[in-house]
Length: 156
Image 1: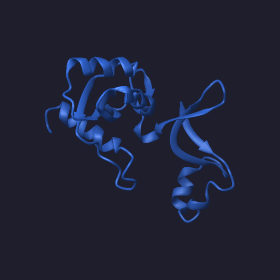
Image 2: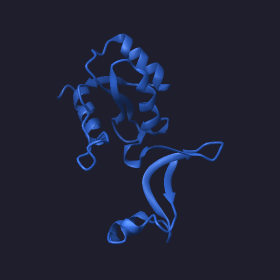
Image 3: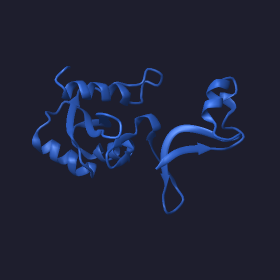
Image 4: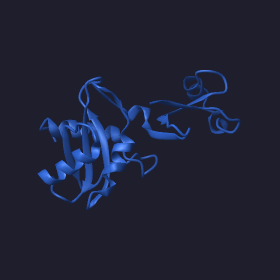
């Protein structure tokens, strides 16, 4: 897994006016850092794993949230899911937050942990997930991670 960096004549059209952003987002002239993470499979296809700022930094290495979240899509009565990291960088634990009216019982926890295909420290539920105010559709994983940490610490 690594940061997705792209190069094409049309890619930077929107960024020309944002010279400071452009300067920070380029490693080399002509290349643009997207802020997304991904990996290339055996067939040369790029799979996006989420935003760089949303990568969970676990003791076993970085974990991208998107694949985990997509696996939760088969759970009955769950509208969407978010995988967030709770804890200090480098030692974060995976927490799954579900958008559902279901009660989080042992059966649901077992289903989530089985689908995640990795250790999950906690499964939490909300009737709605916070969204990024700029897009109104993208889950605000940063806000959700803060909420999850506070909830698990008994402060929400």
